[in-house]
Length: 478
Image (cartoon, rainbow, N blue to C red; front, top):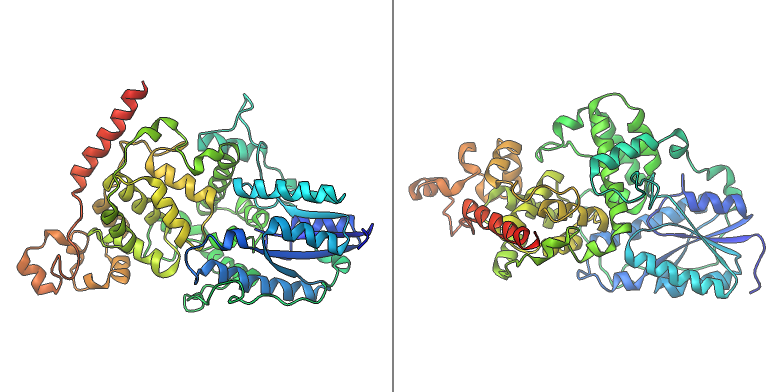
């Protein structure tokens, strides 16, 4: 098909919405006929271990809603299944478009894919235009005075806030240009089964996908925002936003969220804005230091010799460590695809500094299980907990799972929800059931080793070993 001077194609990726969408808005402003496409990338899907992966179903349902919305606006969504690096250029040529528009992705694999697509399209004389959409500031927009990427969050945050203007939070118009959306050629969206997956438990978990799910989640969180500072660390409370998955897949606009909290009164809004800036900090780190996907940001800590106790790692994965707050956290992850942020820090610290297992193993387990998995944030937070990353927690600050449990789940409400075998214990006992005498365990119906495991490590001994590991590496590097 010959190229059409007024036709363009918008490639949806981590931006599954039909409003405030940078690439779609730019395409609609520049061309009078704009097609839309989403590709279920087989290179990504084939690498997933679980055939009932909640994320695939979340995306599939979100794509259905997005297609419906675009059709109501006069367009629609072309849906393909295959290698995106091949499917996208082929479709662009078949449609005869002059240009392809997409929003920029900062993960190393995505950058390589986009380079391949750009080269293929260029051979056909088709432009490939990438735009900023999933962050407020990207790549090298926030740099230090020496024009180097920041490695300390507070300095980055201060520079981020200093640079921010109203223009950075402006909406990219869509609705007023919708008459330029082109109806897609007749095509059938592949089913989950055709993609190689089966339905998960997404519906029973009351996780609503799509733009409507993002809107509902925001409307539930917005009234709690003012008190966010006081409730965010307590997993038994509904104090967090649950917007992570919607930020991950772009079913809402980061500009809209940042605009709301930036101008909102109260400490809670400002604390949550800091969380959004942490997200961009880790995106910047990943872009400038892609090696962090495999190596420590602080390279001297790559020399640590971690334990390879597969039995301990599996006990951690299964929530069978004998430390109730850790086990509750891991069971929440396994059962729901979500883990409370405070618990992510506790669970990560326990794996690395109590079990002495490489942080990469934990990062990859979270990558498999988290519905809101984001490489930059997950990697950054794991390296923070492991004390191997930028602006990380100092290695000598080691979370004590008992004191963390007593402080952030004082009544054991969260523990009892996900470790029901401990529900019969008194509040004073639930954080450390190993302190109960055998006769007391018998009375509570919880025998350690039968109904619930004894602790698989001694925290104080593990702490001493961690300090020795890090001190040895630091001495060798000096």
